[in-house]
Amino acid sequence: MKCDEFLARVRERGEYTSQDEALAITQEVLAVPAQRITPGEAEDLASQPPGPLQQALSSADHEQPEKFGSEEFHRRVAERTGARPRTALWDAGAVLTTVADAVPGGELNQVISRPPSSHAVLFGKADLAD
Image (cartoon, rainbow, N blue to C red; front, side):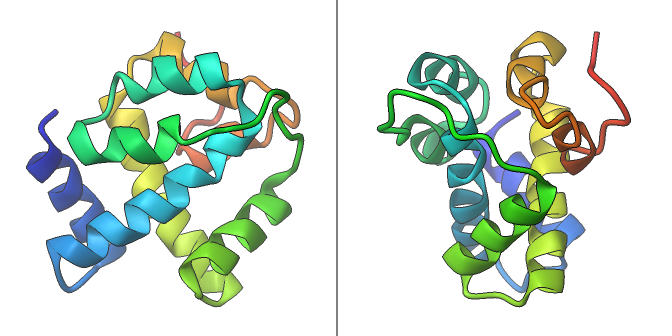
């Protein structure tokens, strides 16, 4: 999937006014799951989405992944985007379901299989992909 197509899907799902807004939200949202995976896993995952989106995932500069649930995930998205919690939920859904469309199941499983398992739902998955 090319960057323009990816951002068009995010823009449509998130009902954003421009590609620039979709890009800004996407970069902020993707920085949060990057905190939950190892730098190596972030690098693997970053090889999947198009161009500028790779930077948000590969910016992980920690040695050990953090463990946090969906509520904390959305709090962090809200903090990064300056949005209210309900808007952060919307933003995360628009971006992460598009990531799930763009990334092969095996790569995505590395992200969503980390405890807590509730993160599969963030990506629009009821469970792990095959």
